[in-house]
Amino acid sequence: MLDAIDKTVLKEVADLEGLPKGAYNIRKNGQLLGREVSANINIEANEKGDGIVVDIKPGTVDESVHIPVILSQAGLHDVVYNTFIIGENADVTIVAGCGIHCGSDESEGHSGIHEFRIKSGARVKYVEKHVAIGEGTGKRTLNPTTKVFMEENASAEMELTQLGGVDEAKRYNEAKIGAGSVLLITERVMTEGEQKADSKNEIELSGTGSKANIVSRSVLKGDSRQDFYVNLTARAKCYGHIECDAIIMDNGNNQTIPALRALHPDAELTHEASIGKIANDQLMKLMSLGLAYDEAVNKIIQGFLK
Amino acid sequence: MLELKNLRFEAPAGDAGKDAPPLRMIINDISFTFEAGGFYAITGPNGSGKTTIAKLIMGINELTAGKIIFDGQDISQMTINERSRAGIVYGFQNPARFKGTTFRDLLSIAAGTDDENKLVKIIARVGICSLDFLDKPVDSKLSGGEIKKIELATVIARNPRVAIYDEPDTGIDLWTIGPMVELLKKEQKEHNTTTIVVSHNKAFLEVADTLLLLKDGRIAYSGNLEGAMPMLEDLSLCTFSDVCEGEGNVRCYR
Image (cartoon, rainbow over all chains, first blue to last red; front, side, top):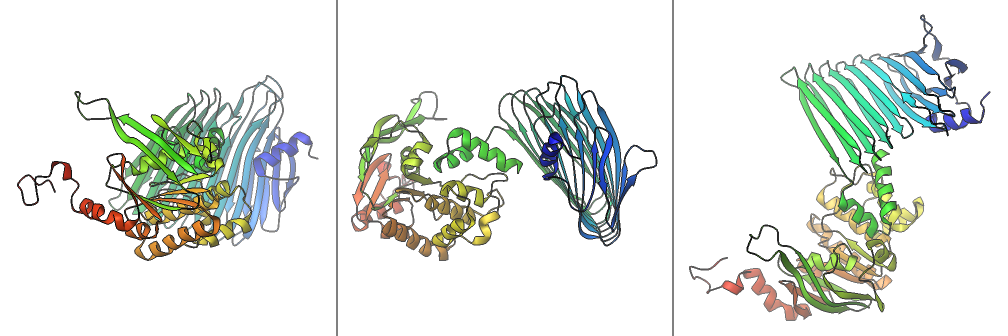
């Protein structure tokens, strides 16, 4: 049964009103709250007992899996290792996410490792949202890790979002992209107050014709701090692009370090990066359409993080 | 209806050298009244103050001296958005490029609604803007022409009482300029929009009721195109008339 806090958290992290349709696994305070499998998607505990294995049959099309995590127990630091096996030519959406509801002055945290084994020809869309809410003052920590292994001609689109509430986040993304495969990562992070977010990415284009596009959008409010690192390494004839933009609203502090390494003569790698305040011409435009200064700022940030 | 009274605008002179005055006069005592529903074209050489005048009316640049009266009300101290809400809208010469914000977002803000049918109606009314644009991000990937069409659509979507278009034809293909001129004329006629176009393009100058020719921050001429032609031809030939010692002379700066 879902209580009021569970429902709020599920709405925030997975846009769910109640239990999802199709396969799902809901984890609450380190325990299983509910699980449903489908004919094509199996979910079971892994051998070590520290997470689940989501096994998607080859050829499964237009199905989704929801695996949200709810954390509302003071003092709990939940650690989990989940593996996703996406069979040949499957085309699925995986919605993950962790919502912390902090009601006390004790810290709460979640460290989730998600490993993706994407078989040849498979397509996966992975949506991960991290939020922290509640009246408590305890520190909320989220340290997600994603490891992506793509075989040939596969495609993965990963949307990783953390919009406020999380005091400390250390993200690590790792990917190895096989021949003809395409990986798109979009990371959106907003921090405020004294929050810190750190994102490290090691992406390797290992097969001929592989492609990667890494997009990072950061908004820093208050005195918060964000650091973003990407190492994009090419070991074959491939194409890779990094685009990272940070908007500093108040007294935030940002480091953005995109690195390109071509270990093959036919690699094509590019990057663009920017850090700064909201551009004045954007504000002028929206104000000339009737928005007050603050409304214009909000609209620009909303669009930037959309 | 829209009255400019002794407008002055000064800006830092930049790299003019240490003996130069710290401020440069961009707009030098301009007075003019735009009548309701009129079609005006502002033209003149580069650096004559055309865009500055437009930005002063919108409130993007702050007046050094003078007053702007709109419908009897002094709007000189109003913010950009207050002027916009009063009915003045400016289409930028170099429209802002965003990250993530789409044409739909801008159009919804301009029209004050995100109702799909209403947005489609606006696009149909503008005509030159494809429906496919709606979910395009207004970012650096758009061509110069595309972003100018979007800019124009956002101005029209506000149903302005005074619409100022700053070089709306920049980047627009030759075949779209005619329809764009017709569109602005239609908006002027059907909605009684006071239309001010900053342009060098003869297509706009020809349809204007009144033409303002700016030179060195002053109105050098106002009236019909015919009367302006001698001066325009002079300008088109040479902009060094002040120091000219005659065509063919060694000190010809052209």
